[in-house]
Length: 518
Image 1 (cartoon, rainbow, N blue to C red):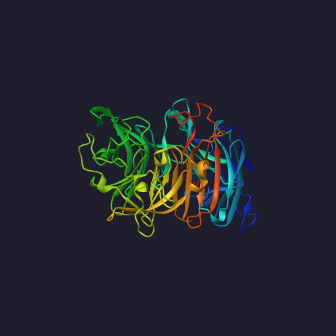
Image 2 (spheres, one colour; image 1 turned 135 degrees about the vertical axis):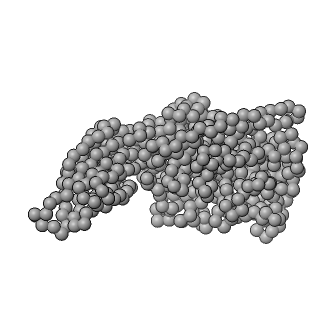
């Protein structure tokens, strides 16, 4: 027998079903009874999810399976008389078959629930799977922190697609009216994202578990990192911070970090990056004077409680929990004193010197950033720093204004080894330079270490060829450089002028390898 949910937004239907298969019982044995109530899209923002409310007259264990080329399973247990089982991974515009198996002490019951879903939104990208070798890949599906242009704003609708390029889950956050990001799963399974002044926590069904407004003097942006104790590190700007440029006082932005106490919902600490860096250095700042740093990424090192900061307009910097500057990784050109009034310490002693694998120092032109060595370059307009298990630093090198010109267009994932005592940096590994302009993303983008396979996941989030705007997600073998997975997402940008201006083109900010689980 089957239970059908015939319309996309019909939420309740109950039918008493009887056992189909009996193990170790005779004809006189009473049949176990159960009922299933299917609820599609229970919180109205995750249309490819459902809940099965299952009642049984006997305790049992069980599991469900969404059938398809990439099946999605979930196990459960009924200890008393009922359980609510989340269903993830429904196919869009499909009458999905969800097999429910109940295992009793002496028998097994199998039913099939039919759940009809609606189309995905028309603006979703076309997903093309270019290459896949599942045996060499990290487990999981493909999570996308994707945002849709809305004529100067963004509609945020993170999604997960499968190995066939089919969207199997998405969370429609367009009700917010602004960008909500970055899309990530915390250690406790919670989905966490923020807008400028709100911290959201969801479960995979789209239920809002927590919605916290922070002090509106602090505007969150770009990155949120979970600390080992569950607290958060967040990139912020403030409404009352200024820098002095040539005698002119200018409001600054994107240059503070805050420590957010997630349990007590308070701001516990903040760091001022202007204290450590030269706010007048403007060689690669093409946005506006006050956006001197454009902080876009954080990485926390639990070994020594330090923070690595990525600033699109300056490079990478490391500070201690006690607010001490450790090093700066950037071309050495035009670094002066730190401070909002340019009256702090000299930054030059903290600049890392680039060395080759033999420990020899590269030429002055490489150190200054006006040239690149064959086997070394600094990161330009970087994003998404991440510390590897070996202590090295992984980062996405966007390559914007590389060598202070617009001639060398390539983006890459790159790994660096840093000697803090000697203030040196060595390039260990890279992927992407060889793909040239076809892999070049001036904005956004991501890189992740995948711990089971030891592979690297590289996301070039805004490719701008002459015809189609798109993004690439590539999984690379760290040892061989072999691509074991590649997908292209072709943007539609239904609302916007298809430029890199804010809210004028669809973008893929980051991607993650994610299990589709509750």
